[in-house]
Amino acid sequence: MAAAALKRLWSRSRGEAEDAAASKPGAWARLGVWARALLRDYAEACGDAAAAARARPVRAAVYVGLLGGAAACCALAPSEASFEEALLDASGTLLLLAPATRNRDSEAYVQRLLWLRGRGCLRHVNLGLCSLVYEAPYDAQASLYQARCRYLQPRWDEFPDRILDVGFVGRWWVLGARMRDCDINDDEFLHLPAHLRVVGPHQLRSEANERLFDEKYKPVVLTDDQVDQALWEEQVLQKQKKDKLALSQVDLLMQSEGPR
Image (cartoon, one colour):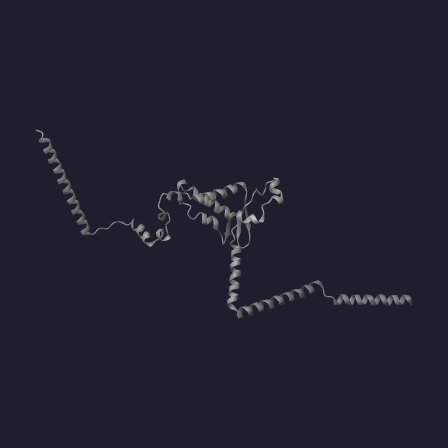
C-alpha cells in the first residue's frame, strides 16, 4: 500500500508540473507581450501629443522650433580640427600683412594661441550645443607630479578665466571678433585728433563713396564745346607764354644796353 501511495503521489506531482509548464508562456511569448505593450504606450503618447498640438498649435510650433534648433546646434558644434584650421588661417592672414599695419590685439591673441598650441596646453570640449577651447596648465602627456596630482589641478571657479574661445553654429566667435580689424593698426592714428580716430560704417561703405570709386576708372568723355574750350584755353596760355618770353628778352636787351 505504501508503494502504491508513493506511486500515486509521484504521478500526481508530475502531472501538476506538466500542467504548470504547459500554462506558463515561453520567453518569446513574453517578449512579444512586452513589445506590444510598449508600442501601445508609445502610440497613446503620440496620440496625446498630437491632440495637444492641435489644441495649442503656437506652443507646439515653439517646441518643435526649439528642438530643431537644438539639434542643428549639436550637429554644427565645431570640432578641434576646425579650431586648428581657423587658427592657422588667422596666422596666415597676419603673415600676409606688413608688421606696421597689423592690429596689435589681433597679433597678440593669435600669438598666444600658437604658443599654447606649441606647448600642448590647448584643450577642446564639446558641450553638445557649443564647443569650448580653454587653457590647461600642462601638456596632456606630461608626467610631472604637478600635472598628475589631482590636488594641484586648477579650481573650477577659475575655469571661466581659462576659456579662450567659444564655438557655436560652425564658427569660432572670439577668434573671428579678434580678427575683424586685423589690418588696422591703431597706433598709426594716435597723432590725429580724437574725432578723426573713429570712422563710422556709413563713411566706409556709403553708396556715394562706392559710386565715386567706380567712376574713377571710367574714361573721361568730352563734348565738342568742351574740346573747343580746352583748345582755346591752350592757345591763350601759349600766347601768354610767348608774350612773357618776348618781354623778358626785351628787358634783358635794355639792361645790357643801359651800362653802355
